[in-house]
Image (cartoon, rainbow, N blue to C red):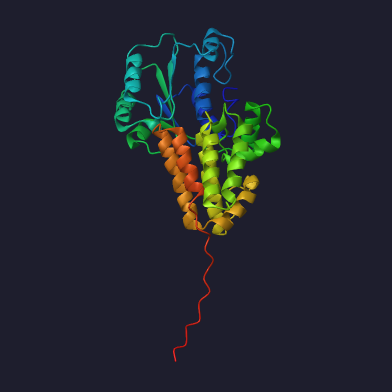
Length: 347
């Protein structure tokens, strides 16, 4: 089956399978949804089906020349474009245009996968738009984008949009255990819940170390330091440990945001958005007692500031120091409602 590796996205599988089986492919598809839910996996599955010469549209044979070239990463008609640093640059789009000005090297279609097109600046997006308006024949463009980021409406209108959604916790946990054979089911369920059903966010990461660091961070956040000096010392220590994460810092920040959102919901008397996030509940209870809504809002702004700074390639150590100092220091006690005082009697 073409989309055997794409779990938890039945609508996307149905739409794309039907298009492949009927030979009615659009010239460009936009796979849009949260990061880590299978958008790139779907694109690669489509490419595999189109490059296969012996199988059927529903099942690449993996034995023919086209399959061997693709699965070994050497197919001349498959081009994969990723952001350079934080963005897809105009030069990358210009180079793509040069490639597409020539026909495919083999008899089948050429497939171009552009990941995270939401990172393009306006100049690059406008250049890509011209390509989408007049696509050269024999080419299939597969774009992926985060649904939470803005895209030019004209790009949306030039592609067939395929929505992707967060995965059910059980499916996400199953994927995590496939990616990391050393991950037990309980830890996988907790991690799947914490990532909001987007297991691809931690692909190629050390999930065990990531969750351990998250737990340590939660204990620091939910505990009240005895003094400002102790809070500063803890903040700088956590900053050093967090900055050492080569892969996964963005995921850790996402988990922090989720934690603060759950704490705000608890303040407002709402149930957790996902009951499977029970592993976060003890920290939420303690944090709710420590911070009020204004303080939680400030913590969320601190995390967003850190994410933006990382996207601008700012120094990781400094970003983490500023983040943890804002999270762990300078808090005033959560104020209790004041009891109205009896007015003084004036004789």
